[in-house]
Structure formats: C-alpha cells, structure tokens
Length: 122
Length: 152
Image (cartoon, rainbow over the protein chains, first blue to last red):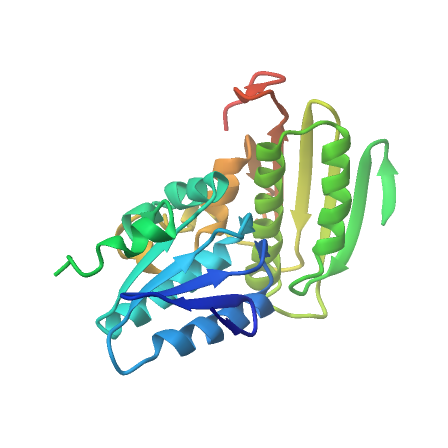
C-alpha cells in the first residue's frame, strides 16, 4: 500500500487502483480540494485505468463530496477508464439514494466485489 | 455563544467555511444528552452543514465580512434550527431538482434537497435568507417518532 498525503491510501490490485479515503468525516472545502488534487493525480494517467473508491473509513460526508465524486467520474470517463465505489455505510448510501446518484455510480459492497469482474466488462 | 432562552442558543459566526464546527460540537453534545438516535444525529448534522454552506456560498456570496446567525433549541421531542445569512435571499421553489435530467450530473445543487429529505419541517422567511428546520426525535430501532410528523 502506498500512502499518499493527504487523506487517501492507494492500493494497486491486478486490475484496478483502489483509493481508500482515510478520514471519518469529509466536510471542509479545504479537505475536499486536497482530496480532489490527490485523486485526480491518480486518475490523470495516460492509460485508461480502473478506479475503485473505498469509503470503508467514511462515516459522514456533505453534498460537496458528491460534487467531488461527479468531477472524478467525469475525469475517469474522459480517460476511458472505469469508476466504482464500495464499502459505503448505510447512512451514506441513503444520501446517494435521496440524490439518485445510485443511478450515476456503480456501487459495490466491498473491494473484492468491486474489483472482481473489471476484466469481464467490455 | 450566548443563551437566549431555556434549552436555546443563538450564535453569530463568521461566514466562512469551517466556522460551523464549534456550533455543531455543542449541538451534538446536547442531542446525545437528549438521547437522539444516531440516525437523528446524522440527519441534523448533514442538514446543518448544508444550510450553513448554502448561507456562506449562495447567501453571503463568500463575502467573509458577512456573518451567519444560527439559533437552535432542543428538547426531548424535537430539535429546531434557524440559519440566517446577510444576503439578498432566494426563492427556494426556483431551485432546480438535482435529480432530474442533466442536473443529475452537476457537481452542485443537492444541499436543499438533502435538508428537505432529512428534516421533518422546513420553511424560509419571505426574503429567503433565513431557513428554519425541525426534526422530531425518533425512538428505538424502528424510527418511531415521539410525536406525529407534521406535513410540510
């Protein structure tokens, strides 16, 4: 696992890059800007990449983080990559349901299921 | 912070991101003291954050010389919060639905929807620069409410 400052850990599996958010709460504009810089530096690669965002540590987030996820997803798709989310707590899943972002993002229960069939997709 | 009534607080804070944290910390302690559920606390926290962010960004237009006034009262039945900014106000009915069409792919515009979803009652003053919101305390695992939820 490669620690990246700030706010995330990155783990490279056989077929995906797993970005784990390390903070329990993601709220402040400054934190979100830092997260964006960190994640975009991983996404912004010449080759298309499969990205999994792991929310296992996250217990609270604001709608500004949803905006960050939208920006990340646009960047991933521009690069012809694929993006999946996983390990989202029930309270936060409810936020995705209310905002209907469950229709925008591919959400999986855990890292294993999120990375399992990347290769089988077109 | 200055107390203005029993169980109530009124506090005016700088209109800049992050300045809500000490207000939330105090409110959080009181919600726990009144045995609000974790779901209640998540709902109130999210709504307060979203209301404050809207006040700072859209109300005060990120003018750091302007302030945000927050009043709240808590008892074992409900928590009531008012967030007022120093902007010109807005028409809440004119806010686009972030769940529809291309709005779904926009990075902003979900705060008011979340507040409406998580709080039991919300209202704005006629000018549109003050939001009042109420959540009733749920009891136990089945989220049964203390009192009948009033319709919006």
